[in-house]
Structures are given as structure tokens and as C-alpha cells.
Amino acid sequence: REIDLTVKLIAGGGATDKNADFKIEPESIIVAGPIEAMDGLTSLSLGSIDLSKVTGTKVISMPITLQSQLENVSGITAANVTVTVSGLKTRTLQVENIILKNESSSYDVSVETKVCTVVIRGREEELELIDPSQIRIVVDMGEITTVGTYSVPAKVSLDTSDSVGVVGEYSVVVSISR
Image (cartoon, rainbow, N blue to C red; front, top):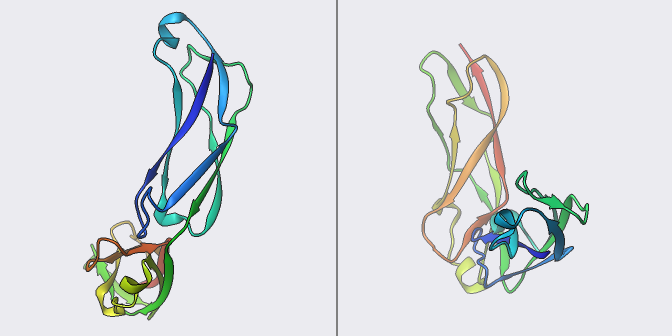
């Protein structure tokens, strides 16, 4: 039986499914299996795509996985999903508001990154209203347990708008000493 491949778009970075289109290649695969395993099977979700990690157009390769009772007769093991976000603008801000959390009292922590370049996305008139001081960069130090210099993933938050969001992934360099 031929079944359609699908993905779920997760709103983020100021984009929603209203600002994004996607195309899956191939659009469908041929699947065989016992009647009870095939019953009601009309589509197969490849998973979710976080729109905060997509700027412009991005091609994402996603594995095609089936439960053990089903056979992928097509033999195609991955699909390319082309996602395009349109109708929104981006703005780059220099953000100094870097906050550490879960610091160990056993160590001295020095933030080496003084400024992060953060990209926000939304409608142009709303982007102009955002000030760098409205953005927080939070670094969780809970996993760092030894002396050294590390690039630590950071969560970037913009709390003043529902329609403007942060795009991309960020990290901050910290030094740990005793």
C-alpha cells in the first residue's frame, strides 16, 4: 500500500506553520505487512521540525522508520524535507545579558563571552521595537564539573513578544577554576 510521508512543524523563532511551507521527497512510500498492522495506516510521520532552526530554505534529511511488522517495499530509508520560511524579516542584535544558573560553589566561573550576536525573526514593524536588553542568554552550568574552558550551550529567550522569536542555536564560552 502506498502511504504518504508527513512532518509536523513546530512554531519557533517568530515563525508558525502560516509562514512555512514544506515539500517531502519522496512524498510517499510503498509499505507491506499483516492486515492488522496495516489497518488505518494512511500516512507516516517522519517527526517534527523546529522552525526556530530554519532560516530561509533548509533541506533536512529525515529517516523513514517503520514498526517491525511492516516492510518498506520501496527500500527508501530517508526522505529530504525542504522547509521554507517566508514573509518574515530578521534582525541581528548584540546581547550582553548573559546569566549563569546551577553554578557549583566549589568553582569560580568566568564568562569569557561578553557579547552574543543573536538573530530574531518576525514582522519588520515588530522587530524594530525589540531592544537587546529584552533578551536573556541563560547558561546552565549544572553539567560542568571540572576545571577548564568550555563552550556551553545557551538558551536565548525573548520575553516581550509572542510574534517575534529567536532563531538559531547559541553557546557561551566559560572558564572554570578553583
